[in-house]
Length: 378
Image (cartoon, rainbow, N blue to C red; front, side, top):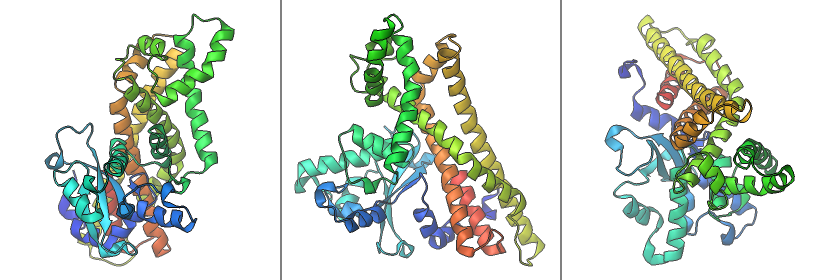
């Protein structure tokens, strides 16, 4: 366990690296403020805006683990959603105010910061409140997951709010659908081949939407799901499939980050030996938490892939996969937290080293970078 005294003070980090953390293009940060300005530049009108309360477009959403003293009864997981309002929307370095979704003062804070009040229009209030709740329920803010959940709820804003191309979206959607197909074949094994094939596409689409539980009844029964909990389980399975795909694409980047921690993260200036020991201790601790985060995420996904393979490839017992679906929501939340931390730490590392024009840093910026990465990953 790293001695917290060896880290750069969190207040100092917040002041010096706020912009780095908030502008990092990671799955822990949804920079509505920046994206909204880009959408406006396209000439889009209010009917295509994400929110109906204009001031809500100033928000930067940040996913953050909730400490025990911050945990609120009724939360489904310990990954909270923080809303950050910059004092100066053109320069987040000047600071701002933030509040977690679910905080007892949440409604009052949004009324003050954004004029977000029911009395201004119930329909608009509910629309915007629903969007905030959808974002809060996601364990990470990946563009694919954001777009999927909003579209599932009939919310279709300008595509500029999602940093994902139509080509990327279609590729990911096809990948997820291909992973759904075997469960349809498993549950409807009694149908003749022609009839089963004709219904395959329809049923896979039904699993994607996770709304028509009556049509999906054979699948729900075969997987021993509670019909009331089935929509949440199916959405979570979709999320796990996405994270499995995302982890494969993230691996090379995390490997480079880990190699830098192993070989390049040493101060290049002459400093006292005591200072050098401190920064190397923080480096080693950061490398350890990075390795552990990656190991746990990989192990979780290996459990899922093994269960999937045993049932749908090797035609063995459905037990492990049934167990997975029963815990899919927890696994989805755990993977989202771990992968978004890994993604965020990697983005911060790249951002800082690009700013300095080198991956070889002096003591002070190196100590700050390692402290920030450690706090993100721990």
